Image (cartoon, rainbow over all chains, first blue to last red; front, top):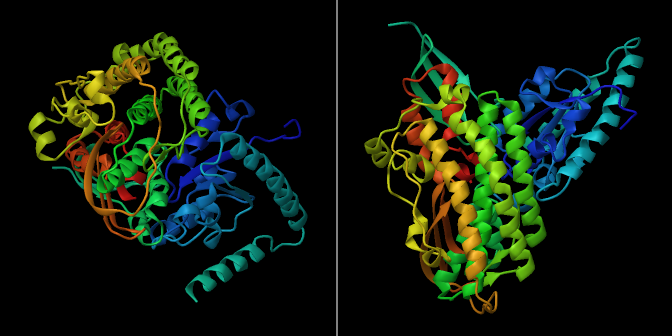
Length: 166
Length: 359
């Protein structure tokens, strides 16, 4: 990870997962895997976070919460969907209260499958997210001369929401 | 009387790994009322009985919660076995008991870490989770998974543990004992930690009984209650006495869990000595016809399983009642009259598992 020049801070939210992926996310921070040695810190404040780790799928009740955390994060930001439930609903896909993966509500950059996702896979997902973060930052720098950086994403968002309602 | 303010707590909050929302009604710094609201992780998995066969339902129920997943798998399999009238071989019962106690150790270590994190003792949190990894390694070696195992099935267990690995389990745990002791002494003796827990959030014995508290919350208030006493699994042969503390405050609940940690190590050591040879499963034929109720002592308290079938490969109803669900009324009672700064500690001392609560 020597190419990483900035340490991202992550924020974690449990959509409707079984806890399995959540405790694996926390396990990444603790001495066995210890991503904190790279300066990656789990913050509780969306405004401090670069990478959003979502575990579990979304439902009507937490849809707004996930969206709100995402909106509060400053640009550039990356969303990592952790565990098969966050990817597409997983074993709970057929449940009546599951809308599907996190990408039905917010755009997802990296998908980490697994039930439960292993800490190695989660760390790998975050490292992949760093690449996306760097790309987005470069895109923002380029577009600061020519504006309208965030607009395509906002459109994409309304599109997916529109589909859900239709 | 001061002016009342409402402070929303959660669903996204630094001390909560899981979402629960509490509206805290404050007068100055004192909580006078609490309105809990849940529903952020409701999945409706009991309804899946219509779509998944009863053998598959075990894996769905296991995924109610990733912390006590083994217990849920056991509860689902054992309630279906009960409804079908299947006798599980002795060795399978012992293996289930060993895994169940291992998950208790991992769950309590996890909880101790979260509590330390809750009062801002970051290095203690890290050390608890460092020791927990040794237990997860044992899980990985015996079941293949770290948090979700899928090792229980209707009719027995899927994997056997050979004698050498059994020996290794008890040796590893006994070798961990001094390290765990060193850690838990900080929780029990450190003055700054005790300032946060002693006398905070007292739940009296009467209240605990009236509000239906279960598990370490009830035992911390002096209620003599532990479902392992009913002797399911191999507990009837292991000899067992629940850990009771009388004070009913956060310190008592912490102490109950710490004593249970060491007790679980002893239970596993004993089970490893006594485990009989034999088959680990019985063949399962036919469909579920009938109903069965089962209670199991999870790390967080009593869990209740109900399975009902009507002769088809799909169950008619599978109902699970989980311990945190039972402990939320006690939590609301404890929170009334406490300081705002103590709210995270109090929420943590019931060891909330919201995924269990909402399913």
